Image (cartoon, rainbow, N blue to C red; front, side, top):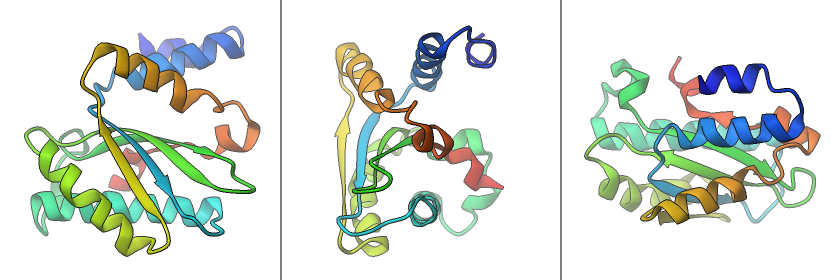
Length: 159
């Protein structure tokens, strides 16, 4: 249902809403912002988010994390902003079941190792209003052409 809405949207407004609904359907629990605070290309951004994903799951599950089904691992959507000037990503994250507190504890530390000049700010999504408000925020610039071409779904890092 959500996937069909994304695939067959009639216009950009409908597509943006379909993407927002798809993001919401994953039951995110954390809103995050990954900042580099120095020059970063989209290639470096994708690489850094791949590292964050893998290192967090290794800490959460141990060295056999890559054999765990992607549906049980950390999952996120990451939408880039300001690609040509101050690249940063807004994320909606669903940590693995039962590992929310540990994820929130370790992820900023991992980001600091990956990107010493940057930071990762995480906020728990505690209300329906936070969830909806954040979904509009992270998708607000998703149709700036370079942003749309470079958003990330973390499951791409599982293969």
